[in-house]
Image (cartoon, rainbow, N blue to C red; front, side, top):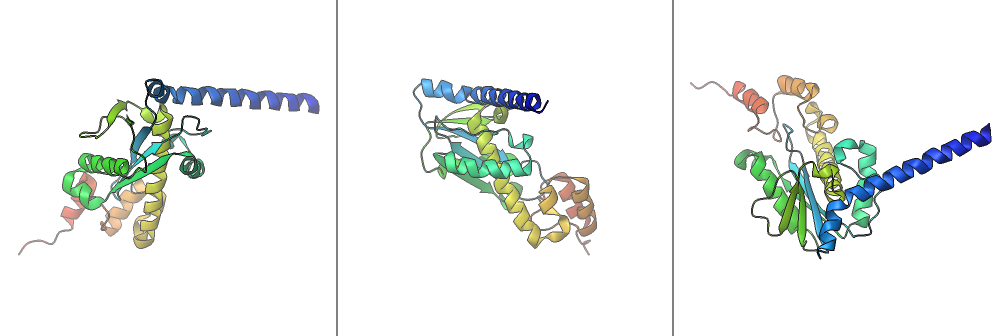
Amino acid sequence: MAAKAELERKRKRAERTRAENRRLRALWWHEERLFRAGYRLVAGMDEAGRGPLAGPVVAAAVILPRDAVLRGVNDSKQLSEEQREALFCQVQKTALAVGVGISDVTAIDRYNILRATWMAMREALASLALEPEHVLLDGYPLPDCPFRQKAIVDGDCQSISIAAASIIAKVTRDRIMVELDRRYPQWGFAQHKGYSTPEHLEAIARYGICDIHRRSFAPVYETFQQRLPLEG
């Protein structure tokens, strides 16, 4: 019985490995098309933090070598915090180049979240140690992108380079929010990372807003307006 159970465990492990290999091959599809077209340096790009009520928006660009093996890499939203942290280190070690761009709350409130995201994306591309020949983006094209580009809907689930960039962006932003939590402990940023969770909204109702809240976002703006001193 023990031998039979061990054989079954081995069979299941082998099937999981085959399934993961198939998934990874599918994730390389967009990059492989560009490689076959003659491009060598393909950057995937994604962002983290467009939706929260507080904190920066972070963009990342990643250029992977064609033979890179990143088992488990996926859209960062599909991964646990522990998995993201482990893959963050793997991507940093494996990638030919990694670039990060950050737009803080001042930029978000001044230019709006979309333009601030574009600014962070351009900064991420500019900070790459190697100049990409082609860029793959999640969702929509980047205006005034200095390189050839292709936008892919749900790209973080379809492109290994974009998935890798999503992990770099997410982990970088989460670490920033944990650090900011030490400065603003009342709001619980280490837990919700600035998103509009019930706990965060309750903290805003109780303590008001702090310097890293986005005043251009409705729930924050409304709280800010309510707490302005009356004229006269």
